[in-house]
Amino acid sequence: MIRLNADWKLTTTAYAHQRAAIEKLSRLRVGALFMDMGTGKTRTARELVWLRRKRIAKCVWCCPVSLMEETKREILRHTSCIDADIHMIGPRTREKNMPQTGWHIVGLESLSSSPRVVYLLDKLIDGETFLVVDESTYIKGHRAKRTRRLIKFGARTPYRLILTGTPIQQGIEDLYTQMEFLSPLILGYTSRRAFQGALAVLAPKRAFSAETMSLGEVCRIIAPYVYQVSKEDCLKLPPKMYRRILCRFSEEQTVLYQAVKNRFLDDLDSYGTSDLGTAIFRLFSGLHSVSCGILPSGFLGAKRLRNQRMDALFSELKKLKTSHVIIWVNHLESIAALDEDFPKVFPKMPVYTVHGKVPAAVRTTKIDLWKKRGGVLIATQGTGGYGLTLTESHRVFFYSENWRYALRLQAEDRCHRIGQKSSVHYITLQGESRFDERIRSALSRKADALEELKKEVRRLNGNKNAIRKLVEQAV
Image 1 (cartoon, rainbow, N blue to C red):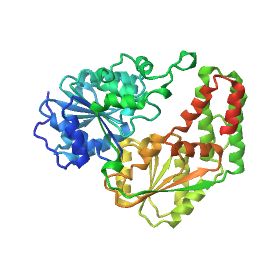
Image 2 (tube, rainbow, N blue to C red):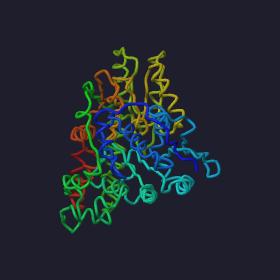
Image 3 (tube, one colour):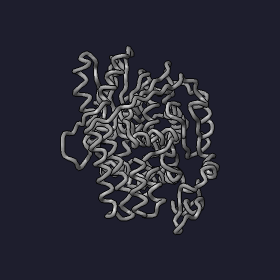
Image 4 (cartoon, rainbow, N blue to C red):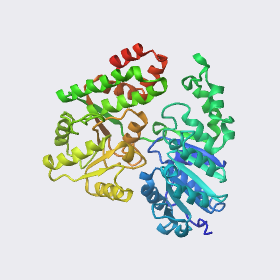
């Protein structure tokens, strides 16, 4: 087997906080970089790989599919490695044609959906592999195929590293599988339930509640294996500026908004306890669609609803003189609507759309063109909001707001990171409804609005009248 060239070099210099991380984790075989987005954790990780270059044959770098091209580009930018040293495991990769390169990049989603990729990694990962999981919250589901497979592969390797700026997205349990991947000895529990039982207060009906776990105790246990830093502690970046624009509902939105609520309330008596979580998600999704001007699932009619969001957006854009603008959305239908109407209002403005259905190579080309030529980048938070550096822009619109705080923060910090020279202005278009206000309130507390409502429902212990009253008042 061809080894990772031991003579490759780093071509950039680490910042002081990156150097501190390297000094701490270089003494360990496993570790976690819980560094805020924009603080350069991938550059830090590459130096940790470099320090082991004479002891490993290859590095397998797992990241979201949307980041594979960017990851390759970053390796080339920070090291003396050349294109031939890096292989991205893609649709055409087979065992017979897999090059024996030093770097292998694989999409995390493929570990769930592609037996072929799992088979290739089973052949590839061995005792001379450095295994990196970038955006390690992708492995938080302890029963998920992706999680179990990564833990199995990781057990073969001498060196394992996880990277994320948001290690806890929905609760302290998010940490369990991330630490299990590094080593089950770190937390010292044989199962997730044992972990819960040790740190949770016994709730009514003898069910363990993750909400009562001691975060401080868990942090103390994992501290020797983690380097954590916030942007405020290590970087002097221009400030973030926030503004919200309230958008009144059209009559059509108002009618459908109530119809979505009525659908949930009418079906409430038929839901069992195990069905409520799914029903709340369906309620949230429907209300979110209506607020964003999209026909909710299960209703008949035109897919686009009359709404003020697009008028408000175009009005703001007409005032701007900046060359690079980003618009974050949550629905593909919103992207289609914007893509259709932009040329009518701004015929000379280049518009680049990025979402999950656009092939990764095409997404990279579009983003490169946007960086070079300017214009408007319209992207979904789930695809464009991870891992990219978009410091060319300091005017960012949230055309629609996701209820998950982690996605909001990820999207914000594409611009607010190393390399940004200007204050970044974030303009959020918010529907005038209790649902939209609930999302805003949750995000201001760094919380997930959907999970909060689910917890409120669970506290009612299946009391349908109380749940009905809660939903009527909460959204």
